[in-house]
Length: 330
Image (cartoon, rainbow, N blue to C red; front, side, top):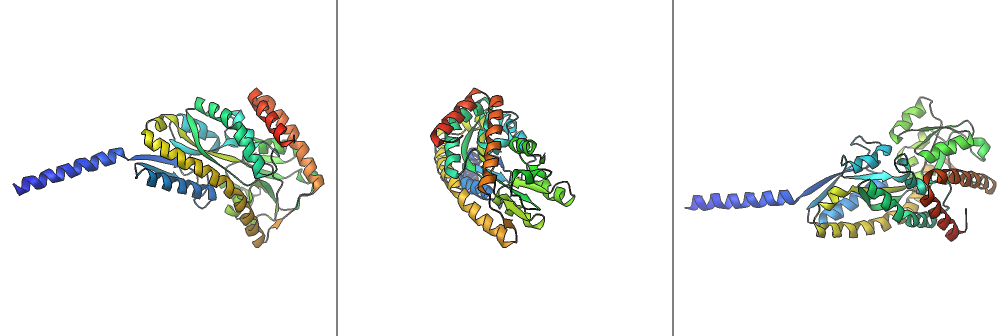
């Protein structure tokens, strides 16, 4: 009799464990940057909070450094098709599929973090509409510090840019290169260091944070904060996977995502200051941008944005017009 009771108890326990396992949902999350990058660390905090809030029912497993094998321009479609359930999608890298998403990656459009967030908030409803067509939506966004240029020699004017062999990461970089005489090459961040060593590149444009990640001081000497773009990253989730979640879990995830967005946008400025200090500590010169140089860059930015808006369509132009109206700039 005792043996039968023991067997019955084991079966009940096993059945309960099977139910618990069935209730546990695992999402593999593609991340573009190394685990130590502040965006990746933010994603880890998000995943940890989701796991805790849902009692372990939703487990988001991170794969930093693009270790799942997807490249930036592929990410919108990978999430749309369910190849990825959740992924970090940089807005400026997916304009081949959805040009308007590159609005927040336009050159010299913002001069500070407040303006950049204003621009994103104005674009947010349109972004949501476009992303729905790609069977996904954004849980939260984060922003990079504004990108500057890393070079072997000092850059004091637009004329100094001509002839540079520069790594860029989006269409904005390619357009900027064409406008200034830079030989711009679009390539993944992981390929930059070998290309520098091989002499294929002599410069790159990226943030102070990425410069630290790459130990830019080992191959380059100057960082000039021209502030060409403050790239926005979206953490996007496949709608089919999202809709399969119980309503109470979706509600908890959205609450955490809202807090996460505020946290990540506030963090960018602090990370920029810390990263510039690290660059200097390793012997890199962080140059200043004169008013004359800034005026040259702003004029190029205005021209390139106008050209982009013609391709991106009326929705893009409406958002730009409203942004210019509020900020009093063009």
